[in-house]
Amino acid sequence: MKKTIYTAIATLILGVAATSVGIGGRAITVKGSDTMVILGQRWAEVYMQKNPGVVIQVTGGGSGTGIAALINGTTDICEASRPMKPAERTKLKERYFTLGTEIPVAKDGLSIYVNEANLVAQLTVDQLHDIYAGVVTNWKDVGGQDAEIVLYGRENNSGTYVFFQDNVLKGDDFSPSVATLPGTASVVNAVSKDPKGIGYGGAAYAKGVKFCKVAATAGATAYAPSLETVETGQYPLARSLFWYVRTKPDGDIKKLVDWVLSPDGQALVSEVGYFPVKGSAEKGK
Image (cartoon, rainbow, N blue to C red; front, side):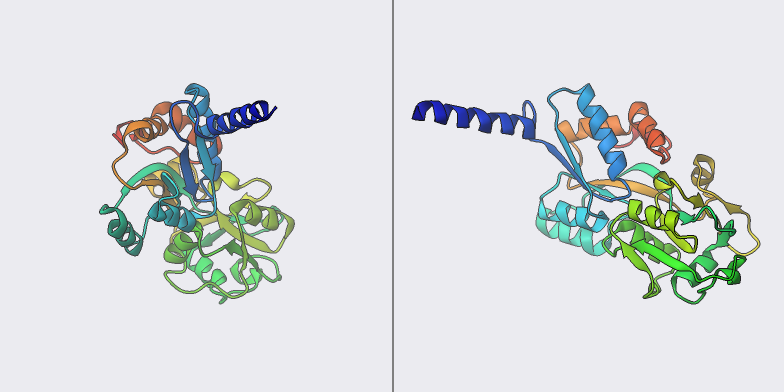
């Protein structure tokens, strides 16, 4: 009886282990950007279908969380919607004697979302600065109706938060009135229900809201994020989306990176709603 129980337990443990690590090795872990999590999950789903026995585990939590996991050794690949900071690279070097390897895997236009009922069709970067810094608080001051501007944004471990602060606020602080939400989907959901709301996040999430076009300066042409405007740099808030690994990719991780940068992998970038990396098939090798 005991032998039967022990055999059953051993079989269960082996089954769980096989599910967790796949055939021939442990799972590849990918962690970080909430902007990128839907893309990372799609890549993982298709790659595992094409490579039976490979297991890829993808989780979000924010770019800062992913970078911290890369530094402390709890993820193989970090997804980040912003570049690593010098201080983060220093920590990586202190622990692993490497500055890490940065791999641009997609492009995005950090998007400004407004409610579909909002009459404001475009804003300048300076106007966005003043709105999110709390200087401009009424839509009528930027061409809209006489109504309070309700601000939605991301938490400070988000790469999107950091990118917005660096490139729109130019290092200034966010207004205390910004409602910080745990993911881009939450920002989109809030703006879709709030006629006075404004938010920001990845282009792939814009469902049930509308893009507010962005102009680099007053009098300049305003653009919505698209493949053309992001590739040419016409969209002022274009950015790269990154994978980071501790060392130069090799083995199973290199195979995954090469596939992500291949035409098949980059086709999924467009399918999800982001923009492919130009000439990506030659990167990561």
